[in-house]
Image (cartoon, rainbow, N blue to C red):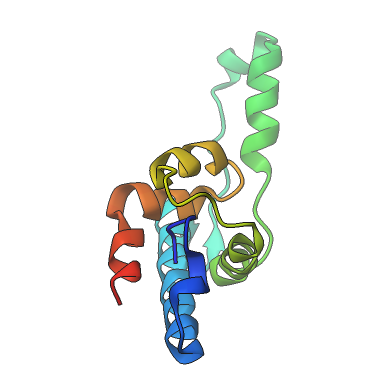
Length: 129
C-alpha cells in the first residue's frame, strides 16, 4: 500500500486491501502515540522556562512557546485515519520512479506514513501479499 507506484491497485480482493489499510492505520496510530507527550490520558503541558530566560525577549523563543502549546485535536487514531485514507486518492507514480524519493517529496503531507515507508520499508512487504 505504501508504494506510491501501486498503492491499493495491486489488490484484486478488496478484503485484503481493507486489511492492509487497517494495519497501516494501526501502525500510524502507534507512531503518533509514541511521539506524543501523554500523561494519564491527557497531554502534558510544555515545561515552563526559567524566569531569567523569559526576561530576555527573543522572537524565536516566543514562536517556540506558542508552537509548543498547540496540541493536535482528537485521538491519535482519529488523526491517522484521514491521512491513510487521503494517500491512496493521490495519483500513482510511474513504475520506474523511486518510492523513497516520492516519500521524501511528500513527507510533510504524510509525515507518519513517510516514517513507515522509510524506516520499515513496509511498502515492499505489502506489495508481496
